[in-house]
Image (cartoon, rainbow, N blue to C red; front, side, top):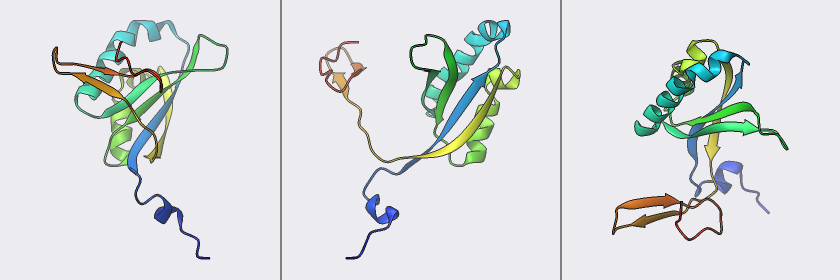
Length: 133
């Protein structure tokens, strides 16, 4: 029996190259003061189509984030690094980060589009078909 290579096994999958930025915050009162500027930057990236997703990471049974994750659309890791370096938190030295290439192969997302009021809602769970926010 001839075994297929990983590339052959995943050839029909999405294979979307993205970059995952994992951030480590420095505990500082400046974080809270600079949060609006950071969030504005994230929204700007979202609107430019560069931000796939972002948000804080939590350890089990904790309500305090220990890190953040930013998933970027970029042509190269150097472009992704330039985007990460421009984050106000990183520019101010309030967070450090690592960056890794991620190949998105599997998964799904459910979006409800309503023509009547031109709204769209992303399902929160796999079983959420209500389209309610």
